Image 1: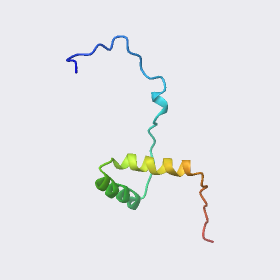
Image 2: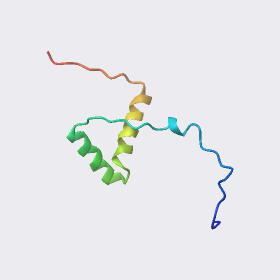
Image 3: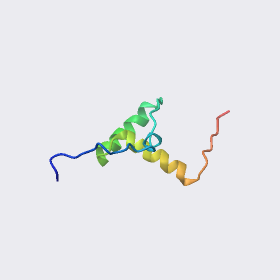
Image 4: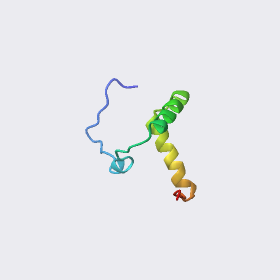
Length: 70
């Protein structure tokens, strides 16, 4: 491994801004507690776990069925 690297000719990744976007969401305290407990077990940050879960939901092809009690 070198002591110093020369990055003068390097170029930023033009697609990097499309990888993630910061959003504000209001989640239930029980949801946050669940993912924080899971984060302790797995060693991954809870925000990453929430993102992985939502990605799995979007890629599964299942539609969300909402039913309201009347």
